[in-house]
Length: 529
Image (cartoon, one colour):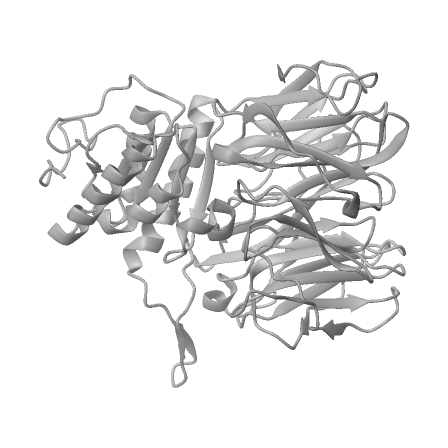
């Protein structure tokens, strides 16, 4: 790595080490923004072959940190990741990080931005002061918060989508990006509205982006539109109620009247496809009375029961699960703590088998899951910790039609589904990483089938299918020829055909629709929305 660069150029723009300012020759790549060079190797290791990466550091770091990053860059190049030049050191002073990161983004014009957790987890509790103890360097959180703000401003200025992801420091990059993420990418981000038109929703730096079919089952799409809303942290949860209305959930970080930062869960509703969304409302925070504790809240998981009650679940400060319920008349219950087992940042909510609701959580200290459920809407919550599911982190997804889960087995990375009375059934597909999307009720040669979509080798989208309710019949996976920078989505259109959606490496939505008369499962060529 080159030596320490200039503090900043004459125009106030930070200069790249040993080479001055970077050229604006490239766009659409990845910018990793970290406090010091020692924070960059794990984020660099998450990048797939073919990615083009620039690294921005707030401080030059120690010789050992720079040497470690040099080693990580060399390893990444061998894997096919292009790291353009030496890191750009902005040498930021307190209070000026956001402006200098924004200048870097204007020059580098990224599609994706990676940084660390804006609200690092506590390591212990100071019992005398009754405050959480954060052992991570304070600059890490400061740089992450500045990066989110800078990316938001840059997207609004440029009009080009920017996708930010924050990662937990110390996470194992070998598990993949979904396992290391602080804020959850949506498992289900394309849904069919009341009028039969499909809509896709993805979080960006400046807010939620929406694409909408112009005609149900047609090939034309409108978007992306940036939906009005608050300044959200990265991540999004998408859920539909029994009426087909779409509900969006996220985390908002804002300053209160006292000037202190506060994090809460927020929600809005989309009643008609392509129309303006409703106002965003706060759902609160189970640790909302303590600002320091509340900042660590996990990302929400959401589901409706058969009585129309909306259930919101989050991982709380103590690594338990907290839940709150909204009745059909709009009234909210208080937060309830579901005691029993410490959990990690991975919750999946789905309808219960007998009309209630349930939440599955990956446990914090073991490769296992715990399940809290209400068999009917009026029952109390019950903990079931007897499941034998052993998931790879970042791979849980719901199977709502059968009230269970899909996941990748921790031992082999194979895709599995839990079948009642049978146990785990392997669906194959050990390559790739992350969760599996699915849609049931798709006709394939006269059979009602479940179509599956997942990330495969180097982020390429792979598709398979099995007869509805019969995963044991086996799945044949095939590559559909496009890579996605988010987990792929699949839904049935207004004519019942399966539609695949992904976000290409150029940041544009790509779609392929099922060929209904094909001999087996086949899709049209990809089109760009």
